[in-house]
Length: 123
Ligand code: HEC
Image (cartoon, rainbow, N blue to C red; front, top):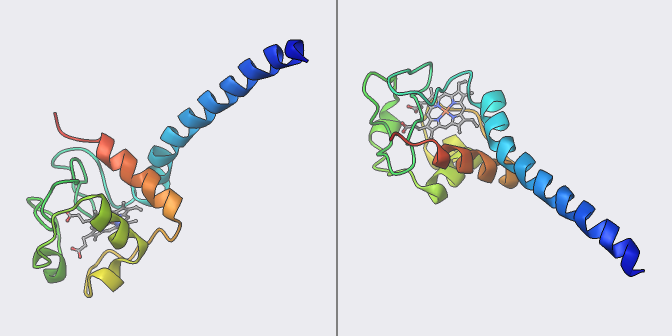
């Protein structure tokens, strides 16, 4: 039995290590699939939506040259994990009149995307 455990434990370790890596990659992949059509994470590169580099800690509607709704510009929000989570779950429910209509109903996917955004900060 202990011989079997000696074989199984390292395999379980590998499994958990690789699923943690997959989890990290997930946020980036989700961002590419769900957000990147309209958002970049590079400074100064706005698409239909503002660039999202360093969005956590940023005042909503504050990117120079981005095409914002009045709702976004006057929202008074400073983005943090909680407000991003609420916004991404149902943008127009949180902010009536926003032009961002894409939602992410799945909480785990929102968390992964927010982790990814948190990892993308200007240095
Ligand atoms: C179809 C285009 C489109 C897609 C796809 C999209 N967005 Fe947006 N997003 C916008 C637009 C347009 C705005 C500006 C909204 C406004 O001003 O009301 C915006 C605004 C935002 C803001 C506020 C930024 C700021 O500077 O205040 C965040 C955060 C955001 N989007 C996150 C995301 C995330 C995360 C995804 C992927 C899950 C995503 N968006 C997908 C178009 C999009």
